[in-house]
Amino acid sequence: MTRAQLVRDPIEANALVREVAAPAHGAILLFLGVVREVNDGRGVTGIEYSAYEAMAQRELEAIAAEAAARFGSESVAIVHRLGELGLEEASVGIAVAHAHRDEAYALSRWTIEELKRRVPIWKREHYVDGTREWVDPTGRPVAEVSP
Amino acid sequence: MSVTVLLFASYADALGAPSVSVDLPDEATVADVLAAVAQRPGAELLPALPLVAVNQRYAGVSTRVSPGDEIALIPPVAGG
Image 1: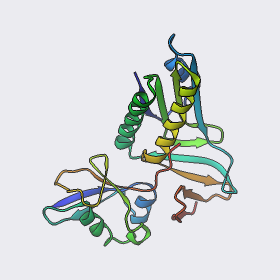
Image 2: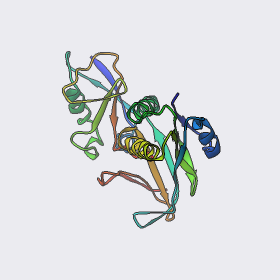
Image 3: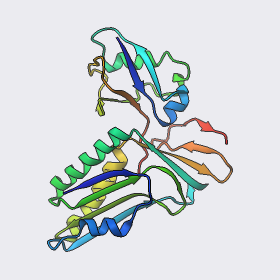
């Protein structure tokens, strides 16, 4: 049974790990993506996440199901947080479990890469100088907003 | 026909609204949607071929659009 969810409250790492644990699994991995203090050399004070929520939920569920089929374990839990996050807060949590570690690592890595590639979620970084900017991983210039 | 196009993040900022309504010919495609949106003030800040979703699935420019479809322009995604 996989689970994928958009959430607004802080991500509970221990609960995610417990969720995927099962007697058949010899390996459990937890990935947390967290807000860090510097991006591209600019000081970051926080990140605001937003989404096309209905489609993002659908894509997250599809990724969890595809991951389960591809790597042979239904123990996949993905949560992505929306709203305002401060430094060191987790924006995404992915817990996976598998009978063996090689598959667990592959499953975890594939899941976060697919999430970053196709789930319609956006982030606006807030910088120490008071400006805010949408992050565009493709590197195209984006509109800047003054405080 | 008239359809509503959802906008998000930097695209919503560029056009100054979370959605726009556009008039399309019958038997329109995603390409017609993009051409109509391109006429709006602020659309010059968007790429020539933004990603589009129809009914919450990514769609190519030749995808047919029907009245009542949920159409969205998808800025470069940045989850994680």
